[in-house]
Image (cartoon, rainbow, N blue to C red; front, side, top):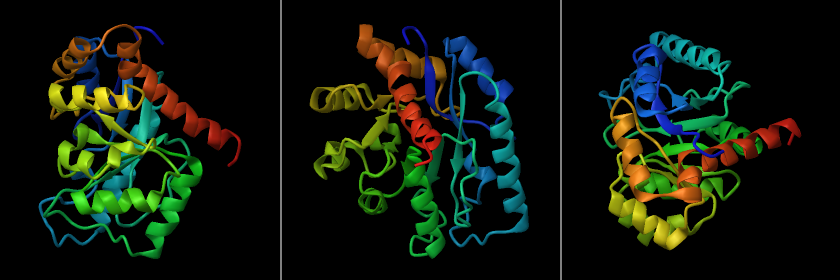
Length: 250
């Protein structure tokens, strides 16, 4: 859809309320986008030995309900943040956030519950925004095995680095996409030259990135139909694939 701008990577929740995000989007001329919870509402990222608690379980429930309520508005797309309790993804979410950094609590990848929730995600063809350490990123992509789309945020900047992922041939899979949030123009340009524009999504990473600045970065690199794809078309196409699968009951 020409001239429509959607942010494919924005944090929103009780600690980053929608009103705050909406102001930044309005300044930038952004019409809506994908939203997932701030990390601090999901788990304690500063405690590598973190053990889940009733407090954090309640926090996850609250922020997910908050995002789901927002999805009643036009052009707002809630993503479900999967954590180590591996709660089945409720109806209404159109994507998944899967996130941790080095020295943060580790996902229980060997748990049966992990297998179950990944099967559900793949069956529904929900795209997964995957932010993980390099080795875990490679293992995760192999585990998904092209059954749904994996979006590498920041062009891989926090998944081991763009060049390292490129050398591992990660981006040669058609089911691996990227978002532009906080990435360098050189990385975005290199991706386009090698793989085209069909798997790139504009993202701001608000509140860590400034939406207006991140949008200017993209509009300075692209024009015409390519710009429309990166700013909204690719995301809409991706989310439409997931919805089509769910509507068909597959």
